[in-house]
Image 1: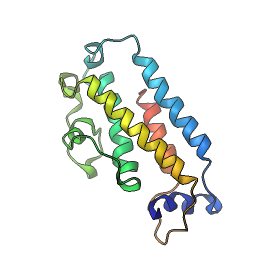
Image 2: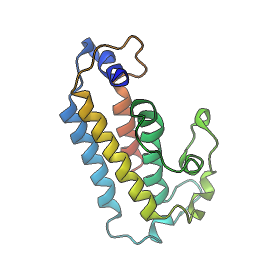
Image 3: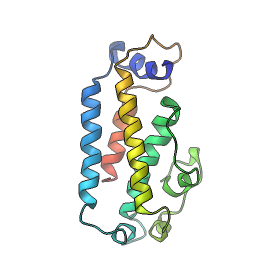
Length: 164
């Protein structure tokens, strides 16, 4: 419970964040990602048109990795993370959290499969919903908050920017 308090205690005035708005924004962004790939086949999601543009499957994996790495790993310890090797595959440029696959090589990824990436995203989404629900429980203030409200905004903006 102390972890959840860190978000609340760093909000302006110490009030609890608007959890309904957080859940709505998260769901809207994640549904948009699914709509973008709805008519595509698995092979389409691996195509990389140029070295500077990552394929859709990579973006789908990256956004799951981003939420898992920067939010769920610290705030929801019971979340079951993806295969630890996926961090290398889906890290974009966050050198402080580990090595990464070079961008020009992302179109060569055949594993994990798109089915595995989408299943992982569902687990990440379910954990994010659980985290949002727990924010409403309003635990006692934390003595050492670790991350501010903008972590949610930053994470959802990352998903929007990656179009997935």
